[in-house]
Amino acid sequence: MTLRQVGDGEWNGVDITQGRLDLEGCNISSQSLACVGIRGGADPRLRRNHIHDGNQGGVIISDNGKGTLEDNDIFANTFAGVQVTGEGSDPTVRRNLIHDGKQSAVFVNDNGKGTFEGNDIFANTVAGVVIRSGGDPTMRNNRINKNVYEAAWILEGGGGTFEDNDLRDNGGKGAWDVDESSESKVQRARNQE
Image 1 (tube, rainbow, N blue to C red):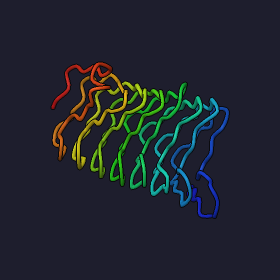
Image 2 (tube, rainbow, N blue to C red):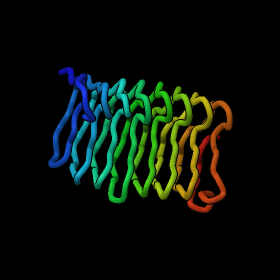
Image 3 (tube, rainbow, N blue to C red):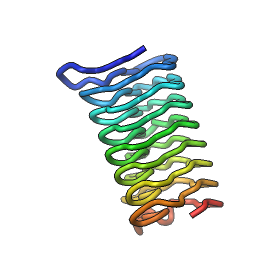
Image 4 (spheres, helix red, strand yellow):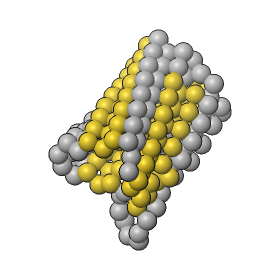
C-alpha cells in the first residue's frame, strides 16, 4: 500500500497517537511533516516499509512514544531519518537501512532514549547519529559509515552507550565529534573506529 501526504497544512503521513498499530510493507512519504509520527504513548510495530522523502523527517517519536521499527528502508528525508525527542520516548530500532538523508540519519534529543541495534546508517549529509540535550540512546552492532562529517556527533549534554559498532569510513571528523559537556556521558566499548 502507498501512503502519501500531499495536502496543505501541518500533517504527518501517518500519525500514530495510541495503541499498537502494525504497519507493514507500505511505501510512505510526506510533503508536509514526517512520514510517520509516533506519540502519546503509542507503541506501534513498523516492519519492511519504505519510508522516504519526508519534508520534516522519516519517523519522529515524541511525547512518550515507543514503537518497534524493524527491517525498514528509511531514506532521503529532509531532517532525521529517525528522531527520538522528549522524556519517555523510547523506541526499539533494529535492522533498518537509514541512509541518504539531507541531514543526519538518527537524531536523539531532549532526554529521548531508544535502542538501536543492527542498523546500516550510511551516506547522510551531516552525521550518522546526532545526540544532544540529554539524549541517551543505546547503540549496538550498527554500521555507521560513509557519512559526510562523522559517525557520531554528541553535544550540549548528550550521552549514550556505544557498543560493538562499526564507525569507520566517515568523512570530515571520522568516528567521533564529542563536545566537553558530553564527554563524561558517553560510554564506549569495542567499536571499530
